[in-house]
Image 1 (cartoon, helix red, strand yellow):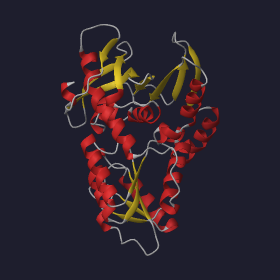
Image 2: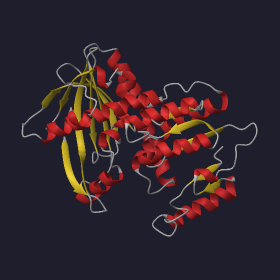
Image 3: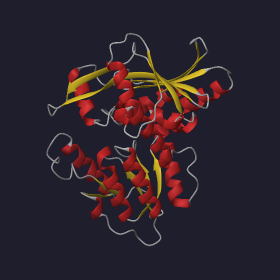
Image 4: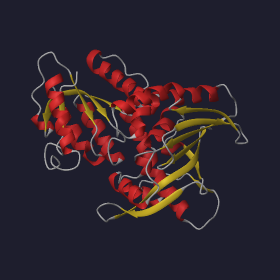
Length: 348
């Protein structure tokens, strides 16, 4: 049961700003119909009642997550559902892993694509097709304007690979043995990819990818590609191709079955980002499995662990300067860089 919502902005300085009145209406309805309690901070939560187990879902700004984890542990949570990427840096994630382990608190990551139907079907097809190659394609619905992308870059200041494409990097870490130590080479598709420097709402400039495509080969012989486009639309998919790059199979999210559900949700929740609708069944699966872990101790199957989160974020930190350098170079066409492991990603 959802018992508490911690919302410092709309219960504080943002109460009278955009979205404030709508949140107040949601709060009133949730309190009256479901008995949900609202708080400005985690510290305001009441103690855990006798015989009750408490699960925290942390969906704040990435930079706030380490502090929120500490506060959730202090508030008596035995399981934490932590939204991606979990923390701004690998070092912070590793510290969070130790903190949770020392307190005997389980952390499950909100990498919903690990349980997505389109991922499963593409992996199954590729497994039955020797010599095939999988490409995971992630799209979003930002307008292709400086204003829209500048706002996106500023709000997601950790960058595309640590934000939008981190789901795909988690897939690579989960199913393709991709880790910094196991990367043999990275090939960047310069014809597809784009990197821009744009001003955000604050006036500060941010440099990030608005779209990126790359292929990773591992030392253990696996090869997989990722393509991400901030302005690519509301359909993400996995594609299987043969050795010549000819497409053999594709499964999309949403597929025809999902679209029927999307139509219902669009009416029920007008104005929400489109990807919320298409990914709704997968987030339900993730949340149900994490909730069962808290309630009964049942294993949360296929749910990404914090170790997967660390591996994915490590790859993101490694890839970002490598891909930026290649896309910023004057060489035309696709470029290839050999994987090099360095303690400081900026020196790769």
